[in-house]
Every structure is written in structure tokens, then in C-alpha cells.
Image (cartoon, rainbow, N blue to C red; front, side):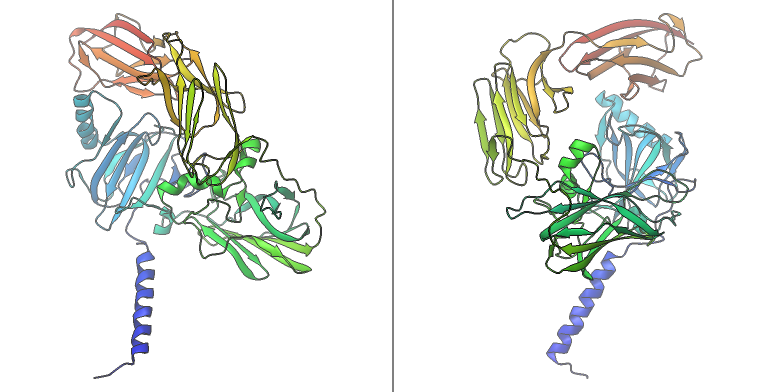
Length: 561
């Protein structure tokens, strides 16, 4: 029997656990098959920046059309069926025996067995929108089984398949390209623009200063020389393109080095949904609001606790030597790399450095405190950690409006607003105007004290407006009292100019029927199904309601054999 010293045993145990942890991080490379039969061309990358979140999957192009067959990537069972007007539209979630879940979103329709299953529930509940979690194994799915057709439902801006792989245990989205989907990619990431930031003695961050760059070769750029003292940081705008596609997708990995020492590294392998809103700490949010362009900050700013970072580096550098070099490395999953080299000299900057006046608004809100502001006709509650740092905002109350303003700061928690509905007239609602003077509907919900109530992450000016005009309703694909024996669908145009559509209801021969609302087209559509009981002469009643309760009701007849 061989005896080992205690120290050697500990080393062996440590090595074993290190190996075990690395093994757990490995992803099965031959388990999931392609969800489409077409060549894999991406319309969107995992983790790329969207308006208020990270993209949680990859978007496959579907040849600019709807109706391509979509297949399950592995055997399993359907764990969730979601149908929404917005968001993912029609989406399926499949749990697999290996501990992963695949998601297929913006579908046009489901396969017959799934469609029949969920349609029965929709008719029972009398609702198009539904969130349903079938019992385990009640809807089993085989690998490569057709589960539906690609579409453009929900908040999709065009036909495509949104595809995700998640850990089943915590629903954490993972980058599907880690699972060896063959995406042709020989192209390096692209830099659009490069920026420099200065940090002053009060820890204020300057406005970004754009740096000029020169292309040295296919993989390397040099920037103009930066002169500075003390603490500085950099930011970059760019994109990645795969082969066969011209669209600009997000970059997978960012690394920076200062004097040959790593300054920061982050990449998009995974993230938690609850941290996705903190994308606003990764980008220069003020610059985005002003210019509609995203700068990715290559340093960790206040409140940024995203899990995408490797190591403990914060990305800031301190200029202490006379001549140094800063290198940015941008990479994709195929290890196509782009390098940007920035020479740095100690000294006063030769560029104008501006610090925007973040304190132009009078009311200071400290991050670690809860605030309750009360006015004659309104109340505001701001919970602690709403802005992730101390900020200044404008608060102003008048007889007819409530201002909560500072367009250049992101909001991470809901702010509660109460606004008195002094003149309780029909059609009143709470509206919001943003810093660009754009109006939008905010709330029509009243509490027992006749106050409009709202929870929101949107700052602006709130005020009461009136909407007394009912929604518009028009039958599109035939006329009242027509014979429609050759028609497969009934299509209406519904629209509300001011506050938007809240509810709709359609009955045929006194029975609720499943009409689908496509808000991007303002269409309300029904496809004749087995729940339709034809009576030759059919009576149809349509009711459409807007957000403040204005109702349009119309009756029609049609004949069908």
C-alpha cells in the first residue's frame, strides 16, 4: 500500500476538482442538431446589445420569408408554450434529458399535435395570449421532429427564427454557438469608432473623445497618440459579420492590455436574465441617448456587476510612465481577431476634455436611500438602488403635470407614481412626454382615491389627457353579407390612434372564436378551424376596446357552405 503525504493528497484533490469544474463547463458538441434545413446564416448574435437587454439567443435567417420547417434539436418534452402579441410571439420550450432547454421563438404556427393541444386551452380560457406549462412528458418530442414553422410573430422586426439553449435548472441562457453549430465565419470583427475617457480627481468621467485610427493591415489598427495623466479609460463601437451575411451583429469577446498586462476581459458565453437590464452600465448610456449609438465601455463603471467579466481587473489604467501602449483585442468564436494599438504618453491632453454637468438638475437622489416625494396632487416613490449611483434629477409639480427628468441616467428599478384624476371625466388617462417631446400612453389604472397609479422605469413629464375616440374597425377580405365558401380566413383591420388596443372579442353564432392580433400590421385574423360550427348564415359580433375603455362594436353576416 502506497502512503501519500498530506500535502500531496491535498494537491491531488485540488487538481481533481479543478479538472471536474472544467469538465462541467464543457458543452456537448454533437448533441443538438440544426433547427432549420437551410444553411445557417445569422441575423443576430448571442449577447449583443438591444434597447434594454442582452440578446438571449441567436437569430437564424429564414430566407426573408415565413413558413420554413422548424425541427427540435434533440429529444425531450415540451415544458412551456407561450403565445403573446409582443415579445417572442409564438414560442416553444423543450426540456432535454441532458439538462438543457431549447427555445424556438417568433414561430408562425406549431405542428398539428401542438397546435391542437394549445388551441383547446385557448378556447377553454377564451384567450389568444397564453402561458402554459404542460406536465412533464405529456408532449414528448423526438429529435428532428417538426415542431412548427418559422414566422414573424411578436416583436420580431422581420421573419427569422430566434433560437436559444438554456440550463434547465436555472433557465440561464447560453451561447448556442458553444454547442458547435456550424456557422461559416472567416471574417474579423470590425471597429467603427474608438473613444478615450478621462477620470478627474472627483472620480467624474469625461465625455468620450473620439480618436482617429489608421489601418495597418487586415488585423491591426493604430490610433492617434493619447496624452494624459492619471486615471483614464477607453470605449469602442464595433460589430461582427459572419460569412454570407451583410448585417452587423454583436462582438463575442473583448480584451484589453496595458504594458503587456491584461486590463480587462469579457465575453458573451452566458448571462442571467435578471442582470440583462444592466446592459445600461456596459454602454455609455448618456452618449446613447444623445447619439443613438452604443459605445461599449472597456472599464467597469458604477453599479456594473455583470457576470460576463473574467478576473478582477476593472479596465481603468493609470498613466504613470512617459511612453506606454494600450491594446484592444476583439474576437469572435472562430478566433478571428482584430487588434487596435493605442500609444499613450504622459502629459497634458492635446484634445478638449469636457465633463458634462451631471448636476444641472437640482434634486439629489442618493443611491442607498428610499425616497417618498409628496405634492398637492401627486406622489413619487423611488426605492434605493434605483439608479445604482447618486444622481441629480429634476422634480417639479404643477396643477396639471409632474416632471421627473434627467434623460441621461438609466433607471434599474420601478419608480411608483400616483397622480390625482381631479376631473373624473370619461376617457381620462395618464400620458408621458419624453425628452424628445414624444408623447405616449402611461396608465389608465385608478386606485380607490381616484389617483392614476403607475410603476415605471421611464422618466419624463406626466400629465392627464383625454381620449374619447373609439378604435377603428374594418372588415378587410370580404364585405358584409357576402358568400365566403372559398375563404380560409376572416381578416379585420383594427387600430386606435391615441392610446392603443387593450382588448378585443369576436363571437360567431354566439360562440367565442380564436382571432389572432398582429399589432405590427394592425390585423385581427381568424383561420377557420374545427371549433367553427357552420350554419350557412353566420352572425358575427366584434368588440374592440382601447386602453381607456372606448369601445367599438359591429355586427356582420356571412354565408358559407
